[in-house]
Amino acid sequence: MSEHERRLGELERELTLLSRHFVAARGPRIGQTLERSAYVLLTRLEAGEPLTLKELALTFHVGVSTVNRQVGAMLRAGLVQRIPDPAGGTARRFRPTALGLERLTADRAVSRAGTARLIEASGWPEPQTERFLTLLVEFNRSIEQLEGLTWSRPARAAGPADR
Image (cartoon, rainbow, N blue to C red; front, top):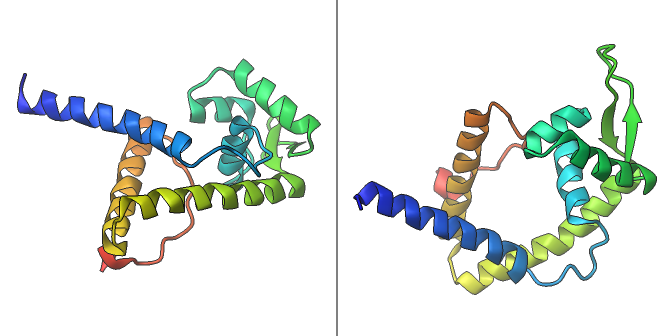
């Protein structure tokens, strides 16, 4: 096995573990009211312009029927609303409602507290955590560029790793 193949194998394993740790180690979803799919969809809709079912399906690499079921449940719960395409297209677009954003904010606070527990458990000093964040943002942006899909982000304040 080449050094490159070994490194890719380790990266794949560590990314799999990160995914598992992040979801599991934050603790139970106590205090969170949104289904995981609603949380992720609302996070995307909050970050940018209203999207169609097709655009959401492309963003998450799932079928339109899957997104349709998820968005349908969110519509019934009052978390999103259907709006006409501002550009005059026939497809309807979806955006979060005030209730959807309120519930997302509340659930995000619980999620952030869990993330804080993970970072505190790592024992990393702030500069190391900032470097990890910078690399993670760069990695995600590279993937988005490869896929031709961008995920809107708020502007980052310069941290120690950026100075």
